[in-house]
Image 1 (cartoon, one colour):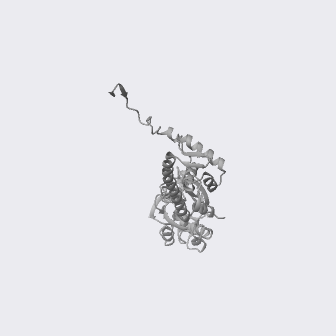
Image 2 (cartoon, one colour):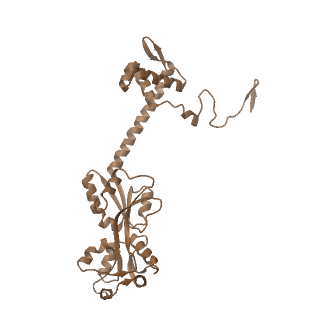
Image 3 (cartoon, helix red, strand yellow):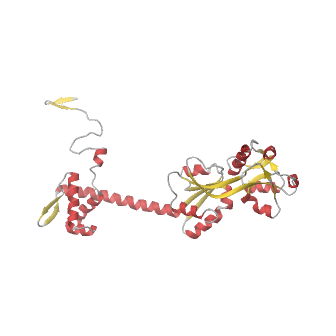
Length: 327
């Protein structure tokens, strides 16, 4: 605190400045002029006439006059000299016009930039998908999308179901597709297809001569050709075995793709539990044999996932509409 000529000046807390500049912070926002009133004032300066400015904006002159009067009250300034010969800017009005032109210019830049971003967003789609979905379902879905949006640029990242949600959460993908038995936390999800896992072996395997279904305990006790940890197929199998009270799966060989697992089984390496989508053709042509099971539920949902709190829009919404058997 300091004293000069009997006057005491105290330090003011931030946000409580009461100088001629006016209040700051939240209180100041209540006094911000509306943009259309600023446009009107700028047009008055450009045309030299309130009537011409009103006509440019498509409003009646009395409405324009009321709008400028409200702007003057909000700013606490006289902006126009109103006479029988017309209206002209005051010095304060000219100063406000100078600043308003800069504000409106930056606003136009913001709108133009946002339109460019939206156009770029609408022209590109980044997708993340688990391997089974990417290999056996997405080609048809993307074909439908291509017919709907021939101008759309699509990039696809193929990984396992454990990694897809993280790519969506970080914005690296606008939409993802997973084959995990449960929807991931913190994301919105919708089922787009159903699937089931099949126990398959090569034609010469002893299980092809079984007279009774394979139960969960025997499946859990048998070393299998498995996908890597984090894959939806591996996760679905382990959960199904635990629900059946049989513990988790045993590893004979661990491979990073459904194609590699299928080829290993065909070669006689050992049995595997695989998506029906991945082995349907091989079972149909006799290269693999499906082994009947009992007491274990190997069905699962295939899901689309996207950021929470919003509905997919633009290309992501279009792809979601194309997903599933009906498209």
